[in-house]
Image 1 (cartoon, rainbow, N blue to C red):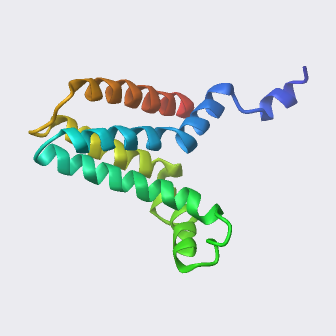
Image 2 (tube, helix red, strand yellow):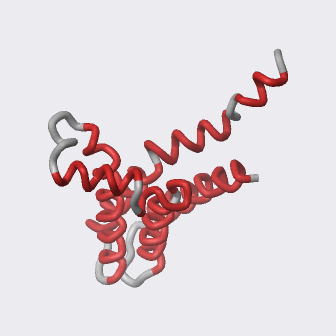
Length: 138
């Protein structure tokens, strides 16, 4: 194997991180936020609903411009701008996962939370995701 070829190939860790960041993490935390918003009360429910809304906005902005007939509408152009030039692209695309994680993490510690299993699942997913992110930076 040529050393130049391996120099230009991305590592499997980087590819796994990009796959998880692009298609799975925000959607997964959004699903956890949906469950929490139905089970919690008070401030914890509000934080979970905010996490769900941010996750839904991010997912919609990511997938709506690709829909047939939607790309030329005002909402499609706005969603495309959000993804390519807006806030969702800040920090190499880490602004959205960080915002959703922060809001859901807030719902884990606020009064009114229920189902501690959601906290454990979220903690494992967040540690794995952000640990993988740090590993790819080093």
